[in-house]
Length: 220
Image (cartoon, rainbow, N blue to C red; front, side, top):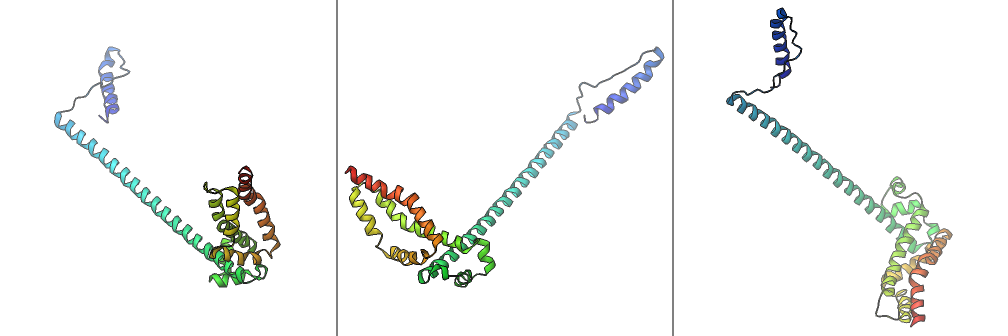
């Protein structure tokens, strides 16, 4: 079956040779239907089935290999990201601890590295400058500060006045708030950080948290 073209060519040559004395030219001969013996047909079908199964097994194995590679690469990337996140958290925590005890302007990158137990190269791998550290520390403090305020703002059981009273009480209550209060004066000695915090208060805290409470109090 796979040599049909060869058979056609050979048959055309033989017929052309036989008909040439009669002045007849055979241009084309084509075998339309071949019925091999049952045993040969069965062997051919088995061979085709074996080839299909082989290709299927190869494709399945390749798919499994690619899947395992992708899973391994994903796990590797996840481990790298977790390690990077842990390293960044350690650096920020070291900077935060130093900021609670000193003016942040007097804290150097070397101080932060020694506190976190890392090299200067590792520091600059994660952060571009000490100013970026100040911004990230401020973001962390801001998240810690605003989180309880948002819960108060969204409490349907409180009036506007009660929410404002609860906000002022929450600003000075709890160990976390006391730590923030201890840290902010040192950070605010940095003019860049102070400007950033004032901008954050104007852009987010005042309109998103305090203003709705005041409007609710006026409506009450």
